Image 1 (cartoon, rainbow, N blue to C red):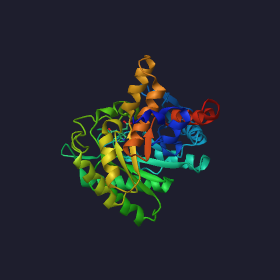
Image 2 (tube, helix red, strand yellow):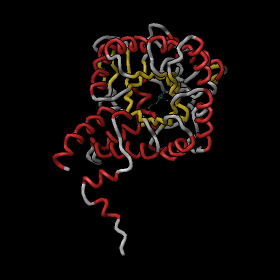
Image 3 (cartoon, rainbow, N blue to C red):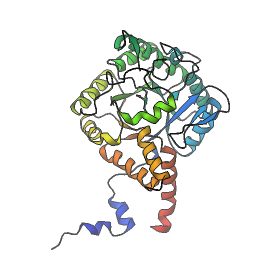
Image 4 (cartoon, helix red, strand yellow):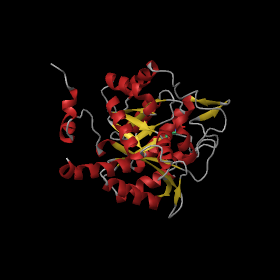
Length: 330
Ligand code: PBG
């Protein structure tokens, strides 16, 4: 007797039946950048198809995202002015707070996640408050809690701290509970590496550190055991969803965290992962759309439930097309 695994690969319909992993629009979270002004749609050169949008344009964009079936967006804000404390980050009329109000009014069912961090708002570009040339952990916690509370007040469904300070999930959870925002969730950037794959994002959000780097708070790419330690701390402190970031170079980490933690796991398919595919596709060196789908299925196969990805709209379009051609083409 010969064992023939190819029997299960014979026709497209059989292949669909034995497929182990699938991707759905339900899994997608679309990142968007919001800036001050009106009628603004400023292209981000290293992130083809993405723009810095004023609130009015953002509302149109997220209405389209919702109409494609995507359940959530994550908001990143570009302040009018940066300062030492990143004060626009927690201002009641800050750009993210304004965007939350406008989206909740026009696209009320969409889930809105907000990035909670200081690096876009501080003049030094670090993710916290500087004391003696170093990011001061505990002084930063107080400001992060203020940012999270101001987002919750403006209507955020989830706040997503991305700063990597110790104790921030607990500090934010305590603040939200104390002020009556018991239903505002926390999507914790629990396992965030000091990665060079964030390059295009730092251009988009103008948030590169003006001195030094982020290695004093983000994780060393060489460390895997430490990932589980970080994830378990955030579970303990009250996170609702655990995120790993970046995604593709860290599939082993996604797998390990999935195997050990029962919360939903999100993976951030970051700006550099997106830009590489777009750049190679533009040169005709790879088939961009196929590579996109293969990348995302690998992230799901590793164990992610949710994927934050700049490809979300394109993936949704591909999924809609696939469904409609099954019947004709098998
Ligand atoms: C802010 C933040 C960053 C990203 C998300 N939130 C940049 C950084 O930590 O330097 C990166 C996202 C991406 O590259 O797509 N702290």
